[in-house]
Amino acid sequence: DTGVSQDPRHKITKRGQNVTFRCDPISEHNRLYWYRQTLGQGPEFLTYFQNEAQLEKSRLLSDRFSAERPKGSFSTLEIQRTEQGDSAMYLCASSLVNYEQYFGPGTRLTVT
Amino acid sequence: RKEVEQDPGPFNVPEGATVAFNCTYSNSASQSFFWYRQDCRKEPKLLMSVYSSGNEDGRFTAQLNRASQYISLLIRDSKLSDSATYLCVVNLEYGNKLVFGAGTILRVKS
Image (cartoon, rainbow over all chains, first blue to last red; front, side, top):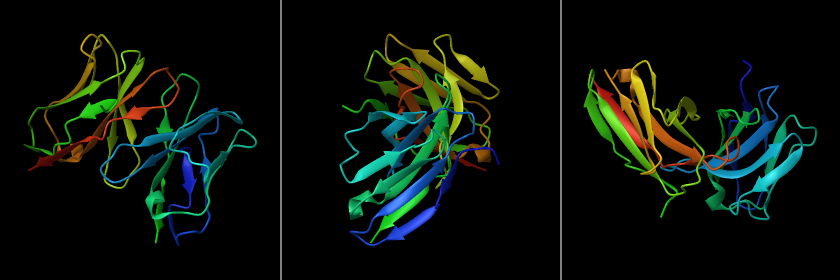
């Protein structure tokens, strides 16, 4: 499968713990995006990278959230001191510059 | 006001019916427009891009009215497999962040 992959697919964690998610984009895509989706809503933009540079961050991305794409390939999204309100599906997408975005299967986070 | 607004539905239609979804967007500077389809607990998948001249892909037709800031999707001859949530999506600058509507639920019944 040459699509966008995400790991893990599901994560259950206790409030206050840190979690890290990984996204592997389609190999030739230089743009990588993170979105968050809660039940009954469309995905909301969090941040995006072009190669290794983080070009935009949403106001939704509080200081507990950090994203990296160190070598311009895979990306990680870390949430520190998780809260119940962080429970959501975290979606990664990739694209070539000025082309359509393709989404991975998402990581479903449940904070108990 | 939300940046992208859609009727949440659900639209319950019989197989073979024609159904239309509408969407409005608030930012007149929006540059590109899409419809994505999302099945329950799955990721959004690109259904089609939407162009000012209108475009068709099989049973699906999309229209864009920039003056009214309005996007539509028409599905003809609905199939059971069309049951999904349809997300209206815009972005301000092609290739940058996507702004999604909350989605319209379609249920096609036999």
